[in-house]
Amino acid sequence: MNGNELSKRLRAAANYVREGDRLADIGSDHAYLPCALAEEGIISFAVAGEVVQGPFERSQKEVRQRGLEHFIQVRKGNGLEVISAEDKINTITICGMGGSLICSILEEGRQQKKLLTTERLILQPNVGEHLVRKWLDQNGFEIRQEEILKEHGKFYEIIVAEKNAEKKVQNYSESDYQFGPVLRKECSSFFIEKWQKELDKNQTILEKLRLSAHDTTAKRKVLENNIKIIKEMIDICHS
Image (cartoon, rainbow, N blue to C red; front, side):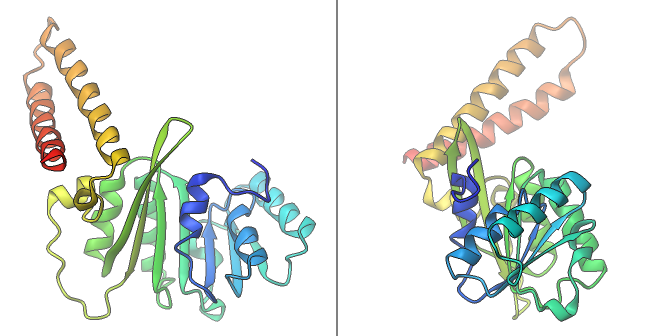
């Protein structure tokens, strides 16, 4: 990817960063996202965090070549340990990781009290979106916006959550966790396409299990239930 031009999924995430935000971009992928936001005059400060030496050095080089050292600090460390209270970070982006890893990063950060000044989380899990939504719900963040897009044949979901200052109970359902409380109401064409593909995949696996010589009863029950739930969601979108 050209460093001066964000991918569709990163551009979608960038669109939810507010003017004047102090950003922490975790797993920064060459620091493309904070560099673009700094050049566009959106953010006032950013930390680009990397845990591996190679990506850390590439991010440093990107920031240096674009002359953004005064706006962006590239730091090496695990997850949110790269930020401190003095940074006054109010927005965190974590893009391009599995949902389980994103949850681990957020949970460790919560335990380390790294989320005290954070107002907004912009998350783009590659898989395991339901895990991310459940963590947000259980840890005082309200899902305000969601977006689904398609790039290079793969679907990506953006989840934007803000600190729930009123600490009110959201009462998200299992369906909200799986499909997204915003996405399931919008029922976009990409949303329907994604879940139709997931439905087809589940049905294919189920047929193979039915032909198996082994006892697959438990696995088939799980698949049959998931197929039922997905079908109901697709039917609601088409109604």
